[in-house]
Length: 416
Image (cartoon, rainbow, N blue to C red; front, side):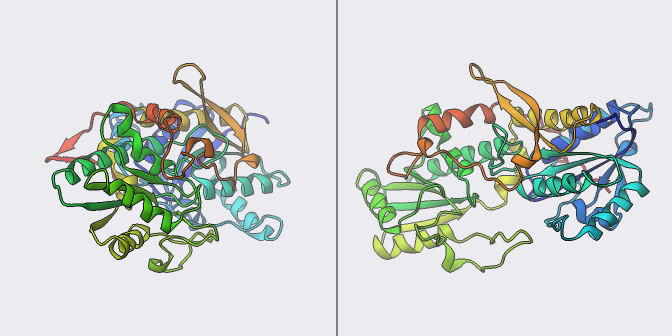
């Protein structure tokens, strides 16, 4: 594809992470470094939904200092800001073969703002948007480069070794689990603590609860992932077995665990409401297990739902994660201005020592696929993870970011 000159458009979509703004900062940096090709960088308010309503912000001007250079202080502040600075959405685009009018209107807006580069930061559903836009543009009379930029704490995107945002969430979970275990150990009264962790179809986040074991610290007695069918009877027997060894049992469980028939363990406590992509809102798994322990065993029991804190804990970002998040955004721009389109910027890991490289990969083989924890990384009993699983995650949580504080609290950058 020929090198295009014109404006670029960037948006954030899906669930926020502690690193999604670092990726945005990488896109901003890449666009400003290629100012000879990218004439202006627009940010979409609330993703593609906001663009359709023409709610845009000039990011080029916002992150330029008085001397006309990239304002690195502002970009650094953006990197330590949690959530999605541009706002997010969960807008499912129609099939381009069935609703050509929708995409014609979208291209009309691209032409209005001279958009030649489109960067969408998100997870599985966002890559679906990138794939549909790419498919439509193949036959459209308008040249554009479309790039997906990965993010998701779930680490379930196909085509990449791991996803930006996962490392920081894993660090938060591992640290929080270590603290919970310390807290639970102060009493001798038999008690069970069940920690519910995000993860609908993939258990990478819940697996990270076991990371303290690699440092010689206590880790959860059991870890249950959605990749293995969940049995309430087997769970109760596991808890009985652990209580026979020590009085303070701690369990980590994915919110998405379900039995062999596909019924969620926490289904009785769920609303049944779904989002635009048909995903059910999950919660209540920990509470359901708590009630089962109370009924079957009768000991002291409580459940803890980490909920959104695991995706917005920017105060404990992984330096590795933030560095890679910036790099993947910047590399996406470099690939686009060199003519790549219809791709997601993936990360490949070296075999010998931990090192990654950024690689543009065709979106057609990535969108709507789920990358699960391999069965060999889960113990044969299905109630814990292997050392190989923890060794895979461990490099992603390394390093601490220097945070800027104001009045005793972390400083955040708000895009007005």
